[in-house]
Length: 157
Image (cartoon, rainbow, N blue to C red; front, top):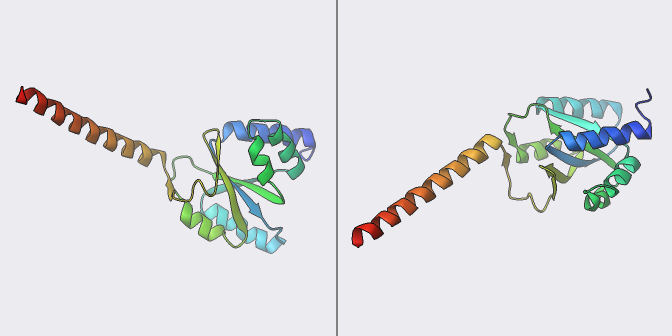
């Protein structure tokens, strides 16, 4: 099987988009072998995996999918980076800082939606457990305040 054929690349890209719920799209410069090896080691230390797809097949595939608007962002050498372990907490600022010399963040795909860099500017961490815990705290606080308000109304009557 030819792993560089266009049909294989297209099917691999479609499966990647379906399977991965969180990944980053980075624009990168072409690096020589020594610099690329050090970049791979940095990615491994940060617990990140990467995938390189052919640019023309990526653009054609995205234009015929629900991610039509993302295809205009793809120009040049594109790398898809995702987490190796899903339970790891990701600090976006430190990842971007360590990858900054050779990578520029284009967008982020999170749960079937693609976000641009302007939309994710205020986010610092991606952690499902922390997000659920924060939601639980907010709901708990809202329920307590509503309970206190309803008890005061009953007592005043």
